[in-house]
Image 1 (cartoon, one colour):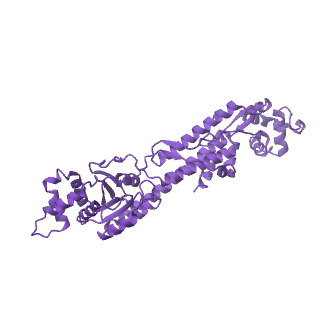
Image 2 (image 1 turned 45 degrees about the vertical axis):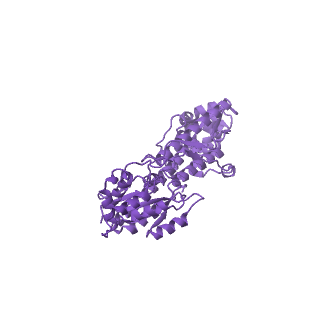
Image 3 (image 1 turned 135 degrees about the vertical axis):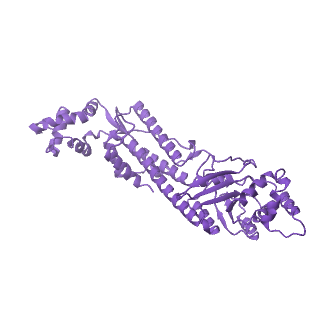
Length: 452
């Protein structure tokens, strides 16, 4: 069994070899990518470490630029009275003067290929079949190495997939996978590595281990992304402030804070998926109209107050009476109050005193609309999904797509998230946040589990 699997990524100039590697290793900064041919001038390598001192090494090679002339030159080097196999022909070429001069780039490719276990031949399917590709494949086939053909840029409409498959078959290459470096599918990696395992049987254990690791990484990343989204939603749902009706300044301040919180979540997701922190949006967060709700006196709030009263005095009448005293007898009859409850008012006043004073001064609790939270959740979930399918070779800014209003304007918050409205101290947008509150953490986990 192999301890290190060496993979030479080869192909014509500018077919996306470096782009393919960026996506496979999830590193948007590896190598150099350009629309101009010959961007990669030297062999670059990257190692993927595995357990038990095993590893996979990718070699990004320069593009084969003049295969027509190289094919003729190699054949001219072979003596007419000698029958040599392909490896002998390539060895003679590497020892020739032109390997250091005219065909310097091609020599680097051939040398690395001979020192590798398998070749990954990258094809730009948008390219028509030309004579240079025939000669190129003939030269690579001389290496006596297994070759896996990868059809790149398959998302375009002007493909030549059938013609490429016909050419590959004619030169004896039948292991073919489709893998778009820009718009990669979730199962693309699996198909590529499974194909390699069939080509290089001694490397099956290494490739199986790497596939297991990929699955674990993907699962862990998805769970972390769900938690980032869930914590953001809890932050925004629990966010509140006391304001007078139609206080535009309070609403604007709330909107700015929510937008900044969304941006923080976006940055965290981009970092998690190892993309640059550059994004564009077709649509800003909708204007927050505000959700005024004097929920100090609703059933949930009364229950919350009751939990702060002395043990044994948590009945509805007792809760009502204690609030009544603190508010000066506005809502309920103070006659209902009896001795032992008075001591509990201190705790109640500490918890709700400022809220009550605001209420009596014409203020109400202002929080974020349900529809805005639905919009935010959809946008972050869609972003996560797009990052799952985005190749690291894609150099365009990440775009936050526009959402259909019917999807979020009629949205309903799950019960587990609505609970956050009762606890303003759960939000990092409020003062006195208790991020490690056990119930807050439990709700975040509950919300995260609802995402796929």
